[in-house]
Amino acid sequence: MKNIEKIINQSKYKHIFDMAKRAGKLGFKENVKVYIVGGVVRDLMLGRDIQDLDLMVEGDGIFFARKLAKEIGVKKVVPFEKFGTALIPNKLFQIEIASSRSETYSSASRSPSKVKFTNLEEDLKRRDFTINAMAMDIHPESFGKIHDPFGGQNHLIEGLLTPLDPMKTFSDDPLRMMRAAYFASKLNFKLDSECRAAITNQSYRISIVSWERIREELIKTLSTSKPSVGLVIMQKTGLLKTVFPEIDIMYDMNQSSEWHHKDIFAHTLQVVDNAAKLTDKMEIRFAALVHDIAKPVTRRIDPVKGYTFHGHDAIGEKMLNTVSQRLRLSNKLSGYLKKLTLLHLRPIALVKSEVTDSAVRRLMVSAGDEVQDLMTLCRADITTKNPKTVKKYLKNFDIVEDKMKVVLDKDSAKKFQSPIRGKEIMEIFKINEGKQVGIFKKAVEEAILEGTIENTYNAAKRFLLDQK
Image (cartoon, rainbow, N blue to C red; front, top):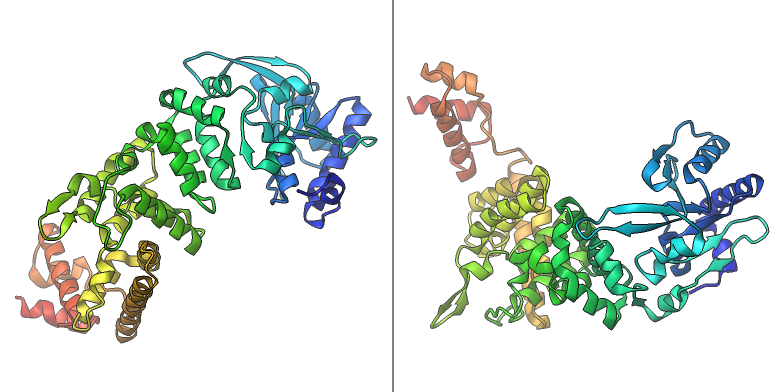
C-alpha cells in the first residue's frame, strides 16, 4: 500500500485531486471542514480506479454542494434533504457531498429512523467496515492528512474485513451482510471471526431487505474477479438459504466425479470462477451460477451410471421463472438465463463427425445472438482437474465452433426465418390471419433448417405452392 504523498502524485488520480483541491479551497473560504471519505479513501490506498468522489462536510452538505456546483459550472444538484446529502452531476465522475451524521435504526427497516448531524469521528463510526471508515482532509493547509480512528489502514494491509461492532452493524442494516460477501470477493479479503459469527447469527434479517437491493449486491458479487469468495460466505453464514435457496441446496449434494467436482455446489462455483476468468460479462457469470439449478431436483441414482440428472436443462429453464420473479430480474436478463440454461448441454452433442448441418443450424438458431456466450459458458463448465480431459473438451468445443463457421459460410450468414411473409401466405392459401399462417411459416423454416430448400424467397414460395 503506497503512502499518501505517492498516491496524490499519481497521474491517474489527477482529475480526482484537482476537484478535491477546489472543494478544499471552497471549504476554507466558507470556514467548513471538508473530507474525502469512505470507499474512495480505501480504493486510493489500494491503488484501485476511482469512479466517484465522495465528500463529507461538518455542516450543511446540501448548502456546500450548491456552492461547489456553482464553482465548477454545474447548474443543478440533486438533494436528499433527510440525510443532508446531495449529488452533483459531473461528466468525468459523480460527486456526492454529505453532511457528517449519525443514524438510529428500528428493527423493522434498514432505513434510518433518525438522523443527527454531528462531527467527523461520529460519522465514521456509523460506517460498515473499518476499511470504509477513513477520511482524507482536503483543507489547503492539511491536504492529504488521513483520519483513521479505527485502524482501517492496518486492516487493508492484513486483508481483513471487520466492522466496529459487528452485531450492531448488521442489525442496523442487514444489507451490509451481503456487502461483506461482495467486498470479500472484490478485494479478496477475509472476514474476521466476529464478523462471520455476527452474519451467521443475524442472517435471517436479510429478509427485511428489498429484493431489488439483494439482487444488486448479488450482481456486484458476480462482477468481481473471483465471485466464489462471496458466494461461499453467503452459503456458510446462512444468507444463501434466503437469498438463493436453489443454489444453497446444492451444498454437500454429491454427483458422479468422473468429470466434475463431487459436490454440485463446488462444481457450480468453479464454473462461475471459470466464467469470470473468460469474460467480464456479468450475464455469462450469472448463467454459470444457474446453469445446473435443477440438478438437485432431478438427481437420481442409476445402478450402472451412478448419479443422473435427466432433463435438468429443461427443468432448470422453468425454475428460472420463479427465480426471476423473486429477484426482480428484467425480462431481458431472465430470458437470457433461461436460454443458456436450456441449451448448455447441446454443443457437446455436436462433436460427433456425423452430425448434420441441420443440427448445427438448429443450435445456432436456438442460441441466436447468444451463441458465443453459450460457447463461453460451455468452456467454463469444464471443471475437471485432469489436464488431458480439459484439453480434450476444449478441443471438442473448437470443433463445434468450426462446424458453426462452415454452416454459416454455406448459408451466407442468413437468418433461418421464412422469406415469405404472413400476408402472402394468406393470399396463397386463401386463408385469414390465425394459427394456420404460423404453421405454414414454421414449415418453411423447418425445411430451411433441414436443408431441404434454400433460404431464398423463390425456393420458399415453390415449397408452399407444393403444399396446396
